[in-house]
Length: 480
Image 1 (cartoon, helix red, strand yellow):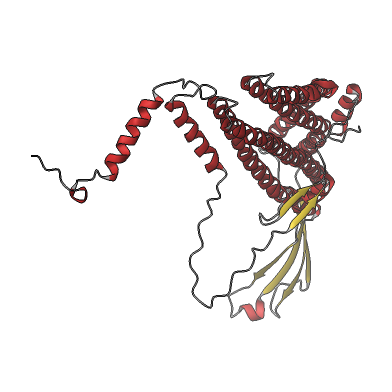
Image 2 (cartoon, rainbow, N blue to C red; image 1 turned 180 degrees about the vertical axis):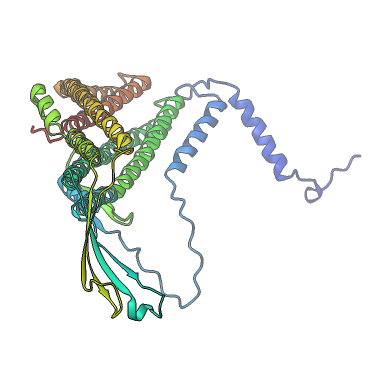
C-alpha cells in the first residue's frame, strides 16, 4: 500500500510558483474579449495595461518631487517659512518710466551725448601759446656767459586763418545734435522691445490661464467618467482617451509656465530688475481700435523720426567738415614777441624787444587728400540719408498694412467665432454626458475650442504688436 506523506511533510509550492499559476489563469481568462452576462464588452489585457501606464504617467505629472527633509538633530529649532519675494506692480507706463531710468543700453547711449559734448568743448579751445628761451654769449677775450651773455625769452601764438575754428565748432555742434538724435532713436527701438516684452508676459499668462482652465475642465470630466467606467457604462478605451487628453493639457500648463518665466526674465533684464523681484503686470492685453492716417504717418516719420534726423545732422556735419578741409588750404600764422636781457659786455644795443611772424609756404601740401576724403564723406552721408528715408517709408507702409489685417482678424474672432467655439464644446460635453455624443466628438470639440481660443490670444497679441511696430516706424505714439 502506497503511503502519502503527511500534510505537514508535503512540499508547498513557493510564492513565485503560486503567482505564476495565478497569472496563467488570469491570462487564459483575458484571452476572451467578451464575457457574457457581465455588462458591456471587456477589453483585452493589452488595452488594460496601456490604460494603467497612461494613468501612472498622468499621476506622476501631478506628484510633488520635493526631496524629503533630512532628519534634524534634537533641539534644532524648526526652520521658519521661506521669505516671499518682493512684489513690483507695473503698468505699461510704469515699465517705460523704469526702463528710461535703469536700462543699461539707454545709459550707454546717453554716454554718447556726453562724449560728443566733450568734442564740442575741444573744438572751442584756442591753441596754447609757446614759451621759448634762447641765449647768445661769447667765449673770446675773457668773456663768459655771466658777463657777455644774452637771454631772449619769447612767446609765440598760433592764429588759425580762414575760419578753421568756426568750422570746427560748427561740425562739433552738429555731432552733438546727431548724438542726441541717436539717443532718441535708441529709446525708440528699445521702447518697442519693452512694450513687446511686456505684452509677451501677458500673452504667456493668458496661455497659462487657458491651459489651466482646460485641464481643470477635463479633470472633472475624467472624474465623472472614472465613476461611469467602474459602473460599466463606458468602455475602458474611452477612459484612456480622456486620460491622454489630460496629459496633453498638463504638458500645456507646464509649457505656459516656462514661457511666462522666460518672458518675465527678459522684462527684468530690460528694466534692470533683480530676479528676486516678482512682477505683477496691470495693463491687460485688450483690444482697442485705432484708425491711423497713412499719409500723415508718412510725413511725420520722414520729418521727425530720430534716425532720419540723425542722418540729416550727420550730413550737415560732413558738409561742415568739408568746409574745414578746404580752409586748411590756407596757412596759419604764428606770431611771437620777446625781450632780450644781456650782460655788461654784451651787444651794443641792450634791452632789445623782438617780434616774429611765421607762416608755412603752401607749395606742396594744400590738403588735397583731406578735401577728397571730406567730399566722399559728404556723398556717403547723402546716400545714407536717402536710403534711410526709403527704409522708413517702407517700414511705415508695411506696418500699416499688417495692422489693418490684424485688426480685421481680431474683429472676426470678436464677431462670434470665439463664443461659438466655447458654446460647441459645452453642447458636445452635455450631449456626451447624456449619451448623445461619442468620446471622439468630445475630444474633437475640446481641441477645436482650445485651438480657437489660443489663436484668438495670439491674434490679439499680434494686433497689439503691430500697433507698436507702426509707432516705432513713425517715431511717436498713435492715438486710439
